[in-house]
Image 1 (cartoon, rainbow, N blue to C red):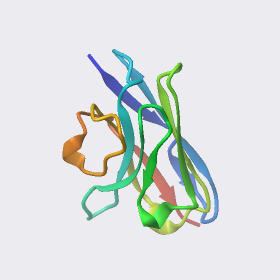
Image 2 (cartoon, helix red, strand yellow; image 1 turned 90 degrees about the horizontal axis):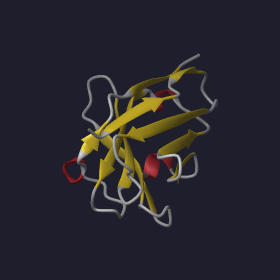
Image 3 (tube, rainbow, N blue to C red; image 1 turned 120 degrees about the horizontal axis):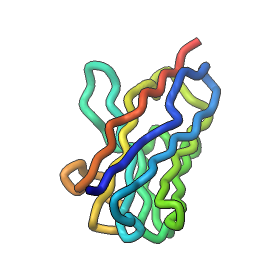
Image 4 (cartoon, rainbow, N blue to C red; image 1 turned 90 degrees about the vertical axis):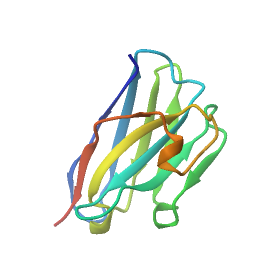
Length: 124
């Protein structure tokens, strides 16, 4: 059974950094697009960033461009989200997801597997 497990969340001050990891198990996700979504309290889940199966193409939502960076290591079956210059509005549960489409996709319905999420809180 394919599984995605996120880690790396926590409490950080505004302007700080965190790196999230998403480890895949059960079968290789090397030919899948991998994405990160987030859901803030009282809001719908939203797309954050995605990376193609090869790592050669990415897509970011505007609010995180130049601050967040997605990367992947297919040999380790792991995708990373480096988050810098964090803001209070980045506070949310962050979810990792995998899509068989292979290229970066932004719609939740295009994703086939989801992790349980990891909490990120940005507060002083």
